Length: 154
Image 1 (cartoon, one colour):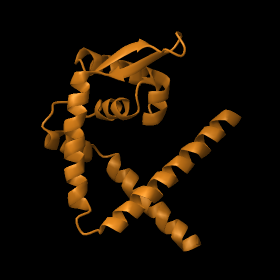
Image 2 (cartoon, rainbow, N blue to C red):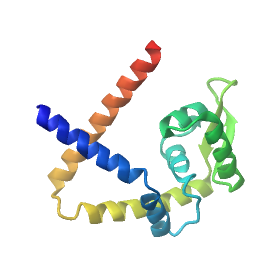
Image 3 (cartoon, rainbow, N blue to C red):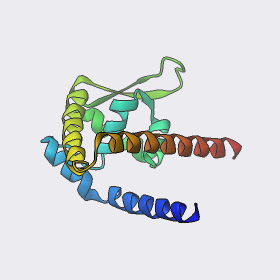
Image 4 (spheres, one colour):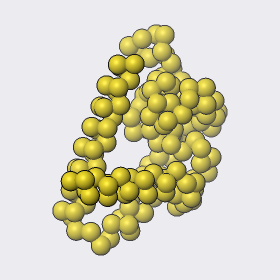
């Protein structure tokens, strides 16, 4: 088990390093044929797929501070890709929702991502891809739950 955990850690470090580089996001944006500042890309995608989201929640999901995300959401808003609105559940909370223009852009990004992932997984069989997706989702969910539990203890 210790060897497996070491391999998992090394794989996660490699993937994190790769995903934190600007090239993958820039390549995806180019493949989608859209014009978008690379720094705004993760915010737009998360709002599209998980929104509407409170700005603080979005900041936490992206690993950025509130003021940075708020400024970046303003930029996305000025491009007509997202809109700020009062949360229905709590009028004190401002949430961010995707617009139809933003949805069109994220559809193009999703299609480009699907094509890039299909090329990456071309040598994998359907069962391997399904197992990877299921196990990675489980791992991410467990990690998020552990992080939330730790945050509530603080």
